[in-house]
Length: 114
Image (cartoon, rainbow, N blue to C red; front, side, top):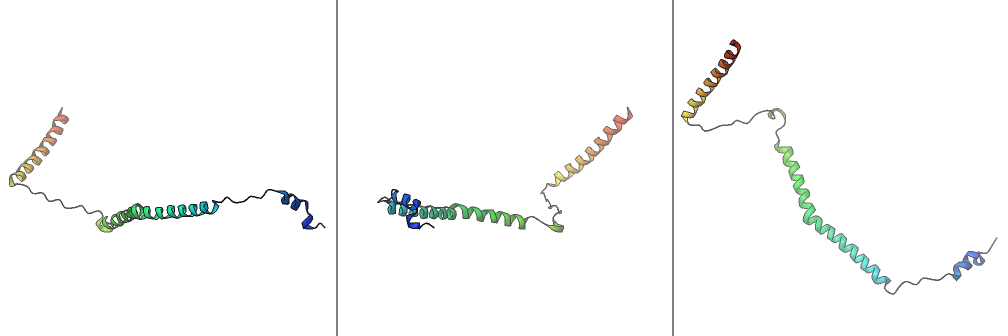
């Protein structure tokens, strides 16, 4: 068995060049950490500024949609429409309905008689 101290690999590694970190290594690492913290802070500031109000608006829209649309037995009821009319308008509408009904039936009678 070979002694690990006299192994050829260890001899080769002993002759390899060693890398020394640059003198600015620590400064570069600290700048990267600060930049990451700044990005993370920017994300949360933007979330509070833009994302949160949008999420709240979406939740409010869903809430209002769910609770303002009629469900169940009241879903098929139509709203009552009340129109203010002059008394003369009612007489004209009544006459118009009568005239239209008589006109439609006379058109059919005329075309069937030919």
